Length: 381
Image (cartoon, rainbow, N blue to C red; front, side):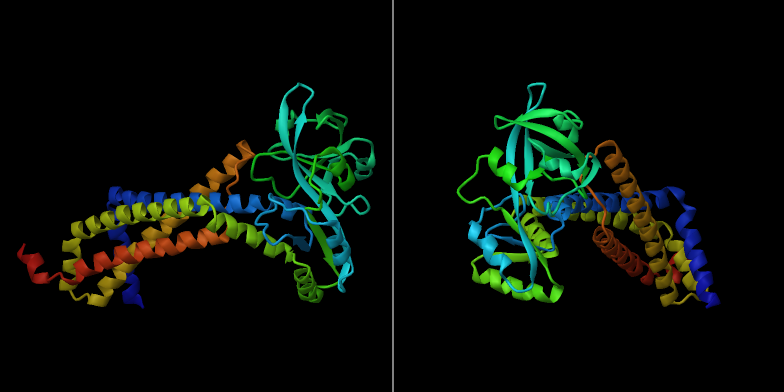
């Protein structure tokens, strides 16, 4: 054990002795990790915001047309589906949810697209947390609640009592709310009652975008799904709906492909920089490794040295890259509320695996060169 500690101490001193080469190695790995984390974090943020309606409403089970891929795209269902769902055993209650787009005219005369969420008039199931106003005010004439998120300024920072026009109808802000996450498409969100949404916004013959179910218990969910499927529709839990939305953006849009390409490019850049720099480091210290071999260092001890050096540099670069990416994302989200990036454990784990691959390839390059050293050739030179 003491011999191994001594070998690793020598390896550390050889690694940091040339500060320029060591810094170049760290910069290469740090830059690669930084780019990988930034790319995957942006993708994670996009996926998170794509399910904003599901997260904000918070219903345990959602009933929808099977063709729906995201909460932003809805296919209205006939009214009889709501009655049929309410009669299913295991359903405590089921309520309709309206979700649609509208164009509002602000007091300045400017027009702004909005998303309107219509809550069940009786229960207001899925209502947001209010920062200002009272939830009962939503029953008032022309009443709407506005979400204070990254898109809030697009409505010219309305206050309680601010009036606007929506499809030739008068609207009044009676409350300001906050939600778990902002939407993906940069459109402000208004909440109102289900019937008012139908009255104010032109719609098709069918109007129910989603049906929200509160099951009696989790064991009742499989039976509810089966019965809903028999009606020709689909019932998904909150997590399943989020996963379905994520799969759509990953595999059926160009977002996932583009992020994957950028991540691979970042990995290749980091691998090339770190591999070349580490190989140069080995060449410049070849005589020292030969001297160690001449005085009795075994091959496996030299391998330990190379592995330690590659691992130390890779992990140091990994930590610096993660820290730099997290710092930049935090600052960007403070300065730009609409910035969607968010770092997850999956992003960090993916970057760590890629760093291990970089360390492994760099080590392999170094080990092959060092093991071929003959002490006689070193002293003869």
